Length: 336
Image 1 (cartoon, one colour):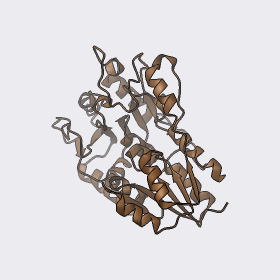
Image 2 (cartoon, rainbow, N blue to C red):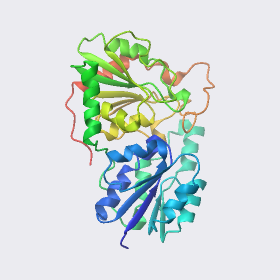
Image 3 (tube, rainbow, N blue to C red):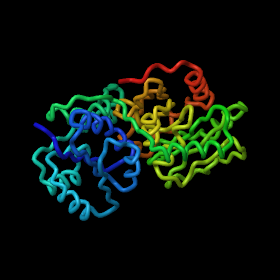
Image 4 (tube, helix red, strand yellow):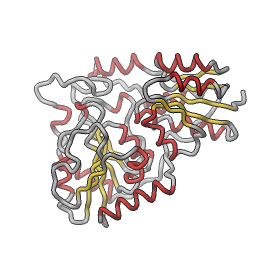
């Protein structure tokens, strides 16, 4: 089977979209002359400008009618459905390609991990599940880690942002936000205050459009700078200049990994066993494996415990210690 025109579908969310990049890399590596397009939501389309293996991105906002019309005209021979929900199935059927492959969603295993957390099951990583979609096409993986290659103008934007901030020493990115409130570790302000006690360290606070925390974490210091109201591509440009990023379980965690920036990832209501842990060799996962975690698949449910035990022992001092160990240790070679 020779692929000539391929459409990959992942409509949301940001982290999931980023985790599809190893699939794009594998397809393009096996069929360098094939057209490889991507269908996603409009908010994530700029990401693919930093990923040259994708030829064209077809994006939609709310209505899919125009998207379907545009995709039908492309006459794809193959669709790789990495969403696998009713919307993506309808979209694929509307295109009517010769070949359709999808991935194992592991929904039962993931639900069992949440409902019977004491069993300590593991659903396997989402990237590996996505790559399994390629078996029927006899395509081998190139890498498990997503990789973003910044365009020169975006790299320059990040460089200028750092220059204007006046940072000259270590730069720590802080990502206090997340789509779901319960996943937000509540002590980023204390961590930032601890970090800037070192006069050689600055912090950049990344703010998404829906984040409600103070852009500077209520810290009046020229060494805590907000990166706010920016598109995903500009966030990537700035984040690429950080020495390390501290995140919740969020899309920005996966973006940092794709930029080869070391990550300290804080997991509370969700758990790495659900399939979304960071994939960099020098990343550090902070997760206390309390009995009540994970309590939901995506961190969408309110905590029902007397206290939030999953975050209780994750202190700023503990995170700072992990940051220091990563910053001043020799980084191993990247994973393949």
